[in-house]
Length: 260
Image (cartoon, rainbow, N blue to C red):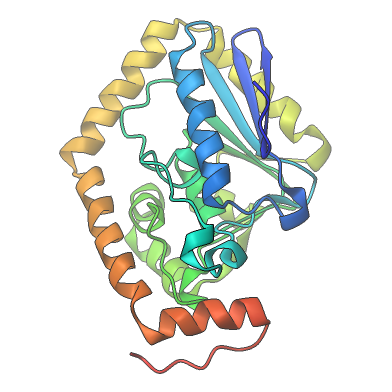
């Protein structure tokens, strides 16, 4: 199937999924999330596809995250996110096929949340990671708060979340955000090689390993934690600061916060 914002290539049992909006650094808007939702549905339902690799088009960005310019448009021009969440992925708590993120540049905000929703993260040497939502009147409501704190620990995660600072690939590896770092030119090949290793194992064993992990996450109420985030982001959207943050970003100026 042809998509407007996504490229999909199948190699034996591996699906290579590329976010294809390089002109906006692969920023994600709801129409892209809807396409990715369909891509992931097809991947999950295809018995011959066992592992996926997710990357971004170009050599600068995996994904710049939420497309704030799209968000700033009047509501009548916009479509809604799918139930599966940002990038069609962040709300998939029952997925039992592994996804490897090949982060080929910066992964900011929702881009980092998308990577954190994958099972393994490989990064290029020029990759950078950040959850900068607090700088523009948002917070990391698509699982960034919960996943980052679970994956690297509360103290390190909070420092990143509350400051909004970025970390380079070397620091991300040290913090445990990512698994490995490679030169840009080698990244996708290395990710495919990793996928081939996984695809060479018993697919049922891989499936039940992920299902066991999903069950553990459900016991820790990951889904209800995200539901709370969605409640809070709706409240945040009603504040003057949220509107100011989005406007300032679009107008390329410093925001004037009012704390209301």
